[in-house]
Amino acid sequence: MHGSSPLWMQSAIGYEDDCTEKGIPTMITWGYGGKEVAVEGSWDNWKTRIPLQRCGKDFTIMKVLPSGVYQYRFIVDGQWRYAPDLPWAQDSTGSANNILDLQDYVPEDIKSISSFEPPLSPESSYSNLPLGAEDFAKEPPLVPPHLQLPLLNLPASHMEIPPPLSRPKHVILNHLYIQKVKNGQPVVALGSTHRFRAKYVTVVLYKPVQ
Image (cartoon, rainbow, N blue to C red; front, side, top):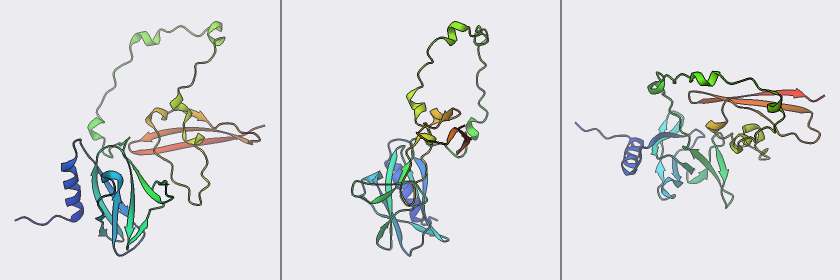
């Protein structure tokens, strides 16, 4: 017997068939009420409006999308809306759209790589001579440009509801960074970002300037 699949599964399967590369399953959820909720986005150039399915108090749909950055918006009872608790930005017309960043996708289940054993360091890496006076007299090397864009150095948002921070780039993880010093700043801030599976934790230490 062949049973009918829910609408969100049909749309996900159909979109996956159209993709030329492996898709990333992504759940889009609306939790701010309404009777009829749909979504449309830049993944198909805003051509298709897909209804969401009610799941308890929320409305959800599963999309299978290739890696990339997308904008999307909800249509709730005929009106354009965006979810303020999800990443969002304003477009050229001033309308707010939610942002879906799948460029640095990290799977929730990483059991497939949990048994990976990194190779041992070569013995030659332990035979370096200690630094001498001529080494300390040299100019310090330039900081790579990607390390100058940590979370602490992002420009402050003056919006009434500031957008959530974007996912940190992998190249800045486990690096200690300092907030840029400003005139009259009473504290200095040090921070470091670490990843545990698909979660990111940033620790910031503040110290008063004497």
